[in-house]
Structures are given as structure tokens and as C-alpha cells.
Figure 1 (spheres, rainbow, N blue to C red):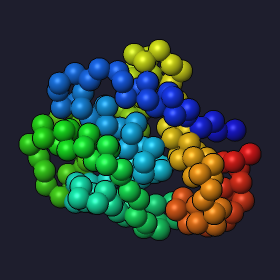
Figure 2 (figure 1 turned 90 degrees about the vertical axis):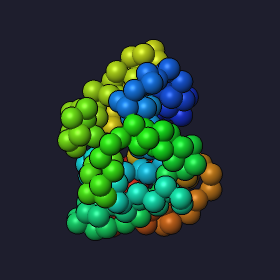
Figure 3 (figure 1 turned 45 degrees about the vertical axis):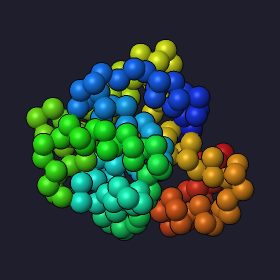
Figure 4 (figure 1 turned 45 degrees about the horizontal axis):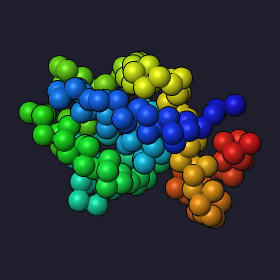
Length: 168
């Protein structure tokens, strides 16, 4: 079963003092953005700069699971962190990846996982799985009283049984 990342752990990862470098800001933004967007790791890594509207936080996932597009959102704090990261970026082409390596190429799944492990270690917590951020979003919504069918649409699940597995 996939565990949800505890919100206290996300907070601890955010409190790790970032280096004042492009990658330091990127690494600080990632956990918050993963929690806010509820993206699958592959969808998260596929985001391009042109897919993100920093004014309202809307992010266009162009090809979600089943090749279905959907809109996800970044909260105000994640947008502020993302602005700090992008201030260091030279390549702001709309087709450039949001989550880039030092050389400007798209961050890989293994790279994303390594960032999470590194931040978790610095925070003194167990490294969360990448998918645990998605589950934490779903659980948070249900605990706040969201209708399960609305959550199903937000998560991009075709079948309610998939959402039930998250919540087991």
C-alpha cells in the first residue's frame, strides 16, 4: 500500500535551509509543488514553463495517465517558491522544462527521487515515495469534506475503485 507523506514531513523538508542557488531553490520548491498539484511523478516532470500560469497557479498537464489532459493548481506559497527558482533561470522558453537539471535538461524520475531523499535526510525524516504526495493530497481533501466524486475528477481517475485503493 502507498503511504501518504505526513504533512509534518513536508513541512520539515521545506524548513531545510536552501542554498541560495538555482538548484537549492528548485529543490525547496519541488515537495510543495508535488503536494499542491497532485501530479504523478511523470506528469510533474513533463511540465514545461508554458504550461504554468504563475498568476493563478494553473498548470496544464498535457498528457496525464491515459493521455488525458487536465488542469492542476499551485498554491500561493508554491508559486512564490517557483518564482524564486525561476529568477535564477536563464532559459525561460515556454517549451523549456519547469524542473531542469544544472545543464538545463529535463529532470529525470531518478533525479527527482534523489532530490526527495536528500531533502528528507537533511530534515531527519524517512524519505517519502514520490507517489505519497499524491495520496496525501487525496487524504487531505477527504478529511476537509470534499465529495469523493469531485476528488475522483481532480485526481484524474476514471474509476472510483482506484481512488478507494488510495484511501484504504
